[in-house]
Image (cartoon, rainbow, N blue to C red; front, side, top):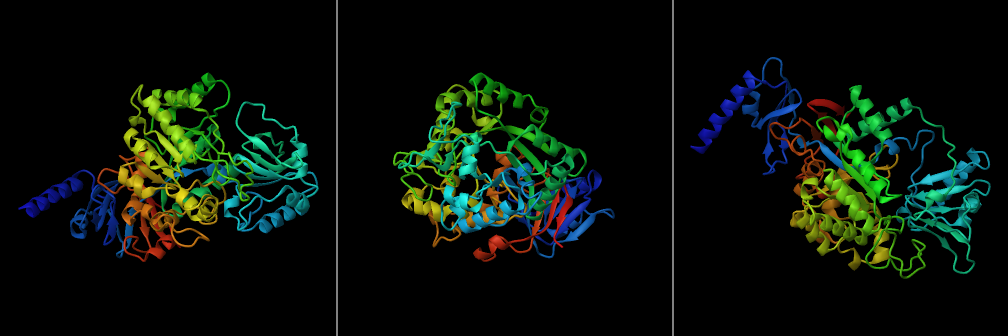
Length: 575
């Protein structure tokens, strides 16, 4: 009786489709992983004007076609919803190699060779700047020293920058006025490391690269250059199955680029924006900046391809640079050049300033997120959410923690209770576990990216890359290939590291798929449009070269995308 009823129900649907919105595209004879509530698998899918109208068996869906319907036989291939990266920095990443390519670096010697090559290519006195080559990813696991940079480029100021931290040579220090008497004067956190014997700067700066008087020597790119490079990057995102991204520190200039591509009909993915907000100056000025984001037309109207979802600040430093804010001391370290046994990292925003920022965002109905890497920063942000949550509802704003690498059982439980979401980047586990294990030991990494525990507690957590530099899904800093991210979340295996990092925190394949689809859609307030393949949602989907649910575990990272569709239109096809 139940089967008969379902058949009649589908017949009604089919007749409705024929009358009102007959499919203009049908894909059939595939393994369509819907990622709906039941994680159902379907054979075929019908679409009309960029929207999914029905999923079901081959026979039932093919009955709805008309003479005008385009029909694609998937040949048994696996289909997933379009993938979503919840943390990128596209406009900066697209421009990194505008003038010359930057090689991959595995050793300090590679870095010094590059510096020498740039010194030979550039006139004496011009700055040589190398950014985001993280020491955790070098075999020696250390910064190039002041002396090494002096030897590689004695006539050029050199800035080796890793986020807010850096290593400088002597000429760069001198030109920047950084000497034994250097002090931070702007009220923000940070310091220059001093040699305990000589009292002179070692060349390593902690959260104060803003004091480096670097003069850019690269050609200033034209607006056309920026649009061309950004479009190239977005097409590469499409090639690995991405149909939606979040820019997690956007600016007015970046938004202008996105809307230009949108207006030209050249935007091939959806862009959600966390607008960057500077936390310096009087707290009233910071609050004014937050309210300005809420007044932006792209926040008021979230129906388009480009939309603002909230604000982003930086709460602490980085684990890749030795400045993440931890609850316990980092410990003395040759890797990170840490000599103070009580050093816990750097907290950029104290709680008494953080709380009013969060409050203002919540009052404005903005999602608030903060770069929070260390467990000290994670707990600080959770406590701020807790404080504001006692004054007004916050769950509806989906308060977020960005990175959230180091956590605790208490942090997970608190996040679940408050409705806090998180965007996490598995590539950091893949690339940095070797160094983190050497620094902290296995026990202290128990709650590093605790994905299984987060899923089990009901915390909505989404996968991303934190893509900063270069075009190329595996060569980029950081790699934005989502299948590497899924494989890492499933296996907990890392580069140059034996065994698995706390395999009890591994995800299942189904969870890993949700991590990059349905969960990210929720994080970005887009769950009614994308993240799963269901009737009424946008027709964003990808076709894979192998079955992610059954292929050998070691093959997951090697999965390739055969085709990517956004709104039912093909935006990528593998040649």
